[in-house]
Structure formats: C-alpha cells, structure tokens
Amino acid sequence: MLEKNPQSVQNRAVPNQDRAALLDRAYNLILTLEARLKRAVRGRDRVIDLITIAILADGHVLLEDFPGSGKTTLAKALGDAIYNDKPEPPITMFRRIQFTPDLLPSDITGMTVFNPENASFTFRPGPLFAHIVLADEINRTSPKVQAAMLEAMAEKQVTVDNTSHPLGQLFFVIATQNPRDQAGTYPLPVAQHDRFLFKIRMANIDRESELDVLRSIQERRTPPGKNFPAVPKSAILEARRSIDSYIYIDDRINQCLVDMANALRQSPYVSQGISTRSLVLMLPALRACALKRARDYVTAEDVSYLVPYVFAHRLELVGGADDPIKVIRECCKEPLENLCRSGLKK
Image (spheres, rainbow, N blue to C red):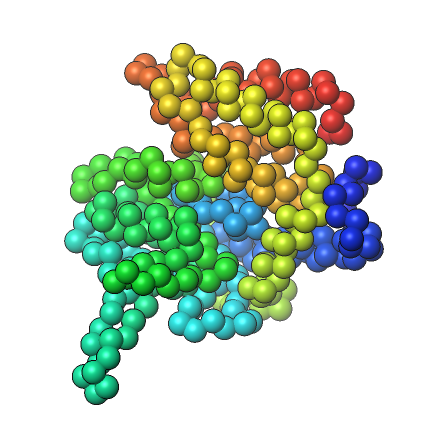
C-alpha cells in the first residue's frame, strides 16, 4: 500500500480508487522487475535501483567502469526481463550493438535497398529497431554514428535517405563505456551526454557480493522460472503513464531544482552549467523514485538522491576542479536545506 499525500489531487477526473489501483500495479511491476534483475546480477542493488527508475522515467542510462564489472550482464538481464506482449514489426525486444571505429551510421539505423523484382526501394531496419538497446562501448565509434544515435535517443526515430522511421514507444538505451581505456575512443559530445538521464559509475562490489557471484554461477545459468517472471512491455508503458499522471510534485520541488541549477551555473568551479532539459528530465525520474519508495508524492530525499546522477555528467568544470559530485553537493546544499525548511512533507 502506497503512502499518500493529501495534496496529491492533480487529476480529480480519475476516482481515487482507480488511481490507487494503477499506482499499486506500477509499484508491483517495479518489485517484479527488480527481483528478476537482482537474481541475474549480484551486488549491484544501487545500479538496479537507478536503472528501474530510468526505464519508468523514459530516460537512457550510461554505465561507466572497467571491463568485467557487470555492465553488459546487467543490460542483457534487463532485455531478458521484459517480453513483447504486443509485437511491433520490425521492432524486436532486445538488441546489442558492439560499437567499433569502423562502424557506419547505416550499420545501426538500417538502409534502403533496391529490389530488382519490382524495381522499388525497400527500407531494411538496423539493430536500433529494438525496445531495449545495449550500446556496448559507445565511445568507440565515430562522430557520424554518434549523430545517428543522438537522433534516435532524442526523437525516438532514425532518418535514412530523408525519410524518418519511428522507433518503439519503450525505446530505451543502456550504453556502456570504459573511461580508463582511451585508445581508439571518441569522447561523447556534450549534446549526447545531455540525452542520458543518468550516468552511473560502477565501483567494485564488496567481498560478500563477489563471493555470491562465484557461488551462484550455476543457479544464474538456469532459467529464472515462475518465481522471477518477466514483465510485459505494455505494463511498463502503462506504469509510465500512471507515474506521470498520479505522482504529485509540489511546486517547491520545482523552485528547488531551478535554484540548484542557478547555483551551479554561478559557481566559480563550473565553466558550463546544467541545461534546462536536465531539469525537465528530472521530473519523471523523481516521480519514479517516489513510487519506488512506496509514495505517491516526491520529497526532498528523492531530490537529494538523484541530483548527482542527473547533474554530474552534464557539468563542465574549470581547470583544477575534478570532482563534480563535490561541486554539486556544495552548490545544492542551500537549496535543499531551504526545501526542507519550507515544510514540505519528508
């Protein structure tokens, strides 16, 4: 049962009991999805928490760390955890794209081919036509391919031969990159960084979790079974609509976000601050976070939790400043304290 805020009345057209049923269904969906992911990937509870928030908030995720930390395994587990109950040809459920320096835009978007039998051209879709796309080592491809990815992530469409082809509603990119191996890489452009809702750095897991990984290899190779069911694509889309309509955000949250953005832009340690788009993307993420905490309203705690993952990769720091998280904490401290003192329900 979700904890409710008396001010959560932004849509009176829907009866309270129907709103509650929709949110409860969305909350149970989150629990089911999380259980499936935690079975496949051990010691990554925080990362799984953020990925489930991102997919419900309709935002993309960039995972960053050294090889062998579980980035690809987690992305594959997410693809396996969702099934396509309402197929949309030619869109498949999950595709993996291994990015390399010699990749061409048509290798991911698809191309127009000539059919000699009827003397016509036909579009052949590429691997981007999937609901869940794993973009492995995304920083190893050329700027031309990055531009094609940017359009897909921003507009949920690809353009080939001046014709736009829509991608699915669920379209979710989970990209990986290794920051320590710079040979043969192309830094992601600022505009593309801005399209990722979260950038998550995956640190080494603790000793007990690493032992659990070794001990559970055989178990995780077997099919999940009825205790860990996959979730339907349509249920995720319904959960997105419910979260957007029925999770309450007080206007003091909006004021806090704007104040934090202005504080970062005015900081002497920041050469380029965060965009307005990042604040817009923050709202559905806050709503999804609130639902994961079994509430139908957003609190200051939700803001404090998500701010580093939404803001850090969008900041350009001046020379000598190399810790964006520290800068964010210092600049956002006063707006968050003002939000707590305003009487907003915690």
